[in-house]
Image (cartoon, rainbow, N blue to C red):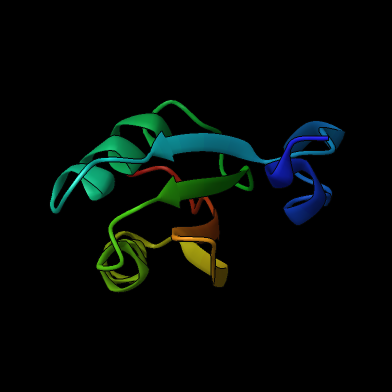
Length: 94
């Protein structure tokens, strides 16, 4: 079993048992935020997204981006040199 599978078993948009994973490993600021922003732009409100990063700054940068853009951070975590941000996509821009 992939280590992400055990971390992210939860209900998400349209009953999918796992969130959308955004791989931001080996990216430094501001690229993790940009990668998450690009992926979220195509997702429906309510979809859960998990960013997996190796830059510890992502634990501050992605939640700040979420607050500014109306998304909800559900949790953050760090383990084995990786940093995780799980968020719920907010309403689309009008």
